[in-house]
Image (cartoon, rainbow, N blue to C red; front, side, top):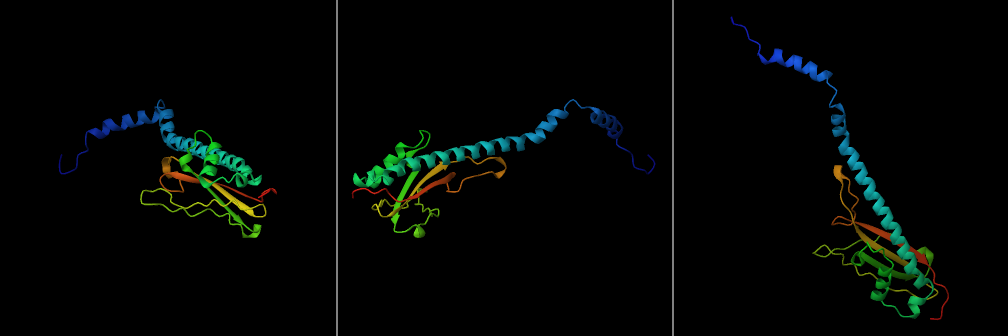
Length: 188
């Protein structure tokens, strides 16, 4: 101890232990799985969420097709279905797992195919976060072009690593099925 620095006593004992740990492969699989597990689970959750959205979109397309049939044949126009009755008819075609409260139906008519607007609507929210758009129900006459949009706010779950498919606020995704058609001739 003459003026020099002394080595800590723990260093000689630590080096053999580090060499032993480097050669030990017993826990390698667990450590590798721990490294890969988070991205793997995130990928599985993202795949499931995307699959649910595609399934719900297809179900909404089917609902729109079945509901539009009443407008195409003139049944809704001849029986003077109102906005609420037509909405209830659309709800009847929804899958049981889908809520009628999140379904929106907008029916408009126009005179030509070139003036049809199929863009996604801009949603307006009230102070409680509920959509307060005033959807139309104007099924027109046999000579008109009908534009029917059936929209559904699907609850989605944000995944790990920032994966989130919500696009309509409050953790929901807006799905839209649009049908553009001219009704069959019927007696108005």
